Image 1: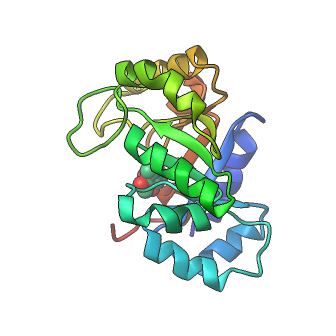
Image 2: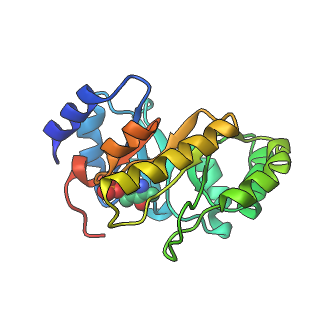
Length: 212
Ligand SMILES: *Cc1c(COP(=O)(O)O)cnc(C)c1O
């Protein structure tokens, strides 16, 4: 646990940049420690792991849960039931299913659409052209609130390349009149802030090294 990193980053961040503490790989005790410092937003990428922690932390009413992992279609109902935000919606088909299930469940999840700005076989995401082409249909979907876009840059880029991709995400969000960009992880968060991120997703820099 790197509490001093957490406090330092919080101090440095502009007011309009939110910090999502990515707690995957860490237990409920670690979440409690930083919740006690005022951190309420926690990100998880594996459904089963998240649910176990959520149960242990059910009395911590100020915690908001964000799903950031790859979405399996057969888990969508459970994700909608259990998460306030979903950052990793990477196709229209999944978005449609989230919308239909949210209606049935009387939920109104906050959504980030994941975009893929550069070829990366290990990552999902809307291609920007397809997103623009589908936008009118997307806007019609009920029972969801699309807050912004999310992106994960490929590993191994230099600082200039990271900023360039993050700015593409910011510009695309602006052109769709979306407020949020969920971008920036432990290795590239400074570049993401410079490019206009509104949600940093920080794991290892706060919690330490994970086993996955
Ligand atoms: C794990 C993960 C993070 C956090 O990564 P760190 O490099 O540990 O900061 C952020 N976003 C997503 C989608 C992740 O899966």
